[in-house]
Length: 564
Image (cartoon, rainbow, N blue to C red):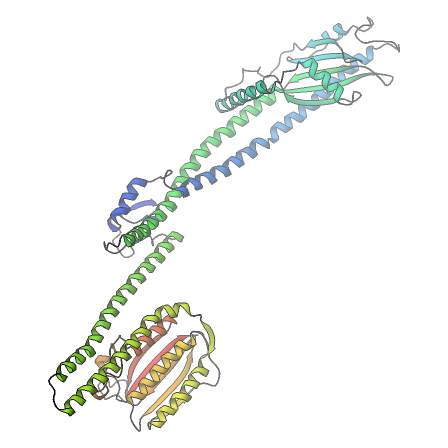
C-alpha cells in the first residue's frame, strides 16, 4: 500500500503488516505472473521449498532425538534386567542346594537331582522360559512359566496406527535384507549356548535384544557352582511386554505430535514463505520486465517497482531502496534529456549568428564590413569552443564524482591558497580582496580538487562583476557540525528574478559587452559538486537592513554549507 493513499483502496493482505502492492499499481506482466504463481508457489519458488525443507529437517532432528533418548524405556529396562538377575541367581541357588558332595556328579544324568521336578516346582510368570545346561553346555532341562501375567500378550495391546505401520514397513525391509543376506533365525537354546561360550561362564550376565517378532527379549545366565567348579548353567529368557507396551504408547504419542507438528510447520512455512518469497518475486519480476524491455528496445512506459514500504522489515527497505534507485535513474534520464535539449539550444545561437555572418559576407563589398563580420565569426567560434568545452566538463562530472575517492583535507589551507592566488588577480584590477579565516584548522572529508573548483568559480565570478574600487571578502565560520564558506562582493548584486535561476544550466545575466564570454555552466556545476558532498549552496543580496527588501543591494553573497 502506498504511503499517504486512502487505506480503503483495494489491496491484498498476507499477514497483519505484510502488504502486497495492489494489482492496479503493477504491470500487466506482473499480474500474469501473480496469477500463475498463486498464494503458495511450491513449484515456482525455490525459496519456499528451502524454508519448508529446513523447518522440517529441524523438526525431524528433534523427534529423532526424543525417540532415541527414551529415558522411561531405559529406566524400565534397568529395572527388568535387575529383576532377571535376581531370578536367575535364585534358581541357580535352588540347584546348588540340591547338589551332592560328589566330585563325579553330572547334572542331568544323576538321579539324585530331579531336574524336571525342580523346574516344574518353580513359580514362574507366563512367557518366561528356564533352560538348564550341564557343564558341557548341553541342554538337560527346560520349563515355561504358567503364572498369569498382568501385562497384555503380544498383539493384544491397544492399536497404534502410526507405530504399527512403521514397524510393519521395517519388518518388510528387514525381511528383504535377511532374505538376500542368508541369515537364519536361531532358537533360544542356540542363542543361550552362544552367550555361554562368548562370556565369562563363572559370572552372572544379563543381556537384552530383539526377539523373533521384534519384541524386546531379556536373557540372563547364572552358573551352578560346587566347590569352585561349574556344574551347569541356568538360562532365563523372558519377554518384556510392559516395556514394549510403554514404548509403543509413548512412540505413538510422539509420532502423532510429529504428524501434527509437521502439518503446522508446513502451513506456517507456507505463510512465512508467501510473505517473503511473493514480495521478492514481485520485485524480481519488475526488474526483469525492465530488463526485457531494454533488450527489445521498445518503449512501453516507465517501470513501476511495487510499493512495499509499508512493511516494517527488510523487504520494505528493499522496496524503498529499489524505488528510490529507479526514481533517481529516471531523474537522471530526464536531466540528461533536458541537458541535451539545452545544449542543442545553446549551440544553435552561435551557429545562427555564424550562418547570418557568412550569408552577409557574400553580399558585403566594403573591407570594413567584411572585417566586422570576421570579428563576429571569430567571437562566435570562441564562444562555441568555450561552450563545447564546458559542456564536455559538465557531462563528465557525474561519473567523475562517483569514481574519485574522497579524502580528508584541511579546508582552510585550500581556501587560503586560493585566496592568495586569486587575490593577486583581483588586486591587479583595483579590487580589494579580504580573507577572514579562523586560526584553528577545519578538516572535512571530500574531493578537494572538486571543492576547489567550486570556490574558484565563486571567487572568479565575483571578480568578473566587480569594478575598480569594489571589494571581495571571503570568510569561513564553523557552526556545530557544519562549516560555512561565504564569498561576498560589493558589485551590482543579483536581480531578484535571477536569484532562483542563477544555478540553472546555461543561465547567465551579464552586461551586453560581456555577452558570449560565459557558458552559464559554472554555478550549475558548483551546485552539483556541493550537493554531491551533502552540502548546500545559495545566493543572496547584501542589503543595508534586512527589513528593507526594496532597497538597492550593496553587493552579492554566495554561501556554501558543508558537513564536517
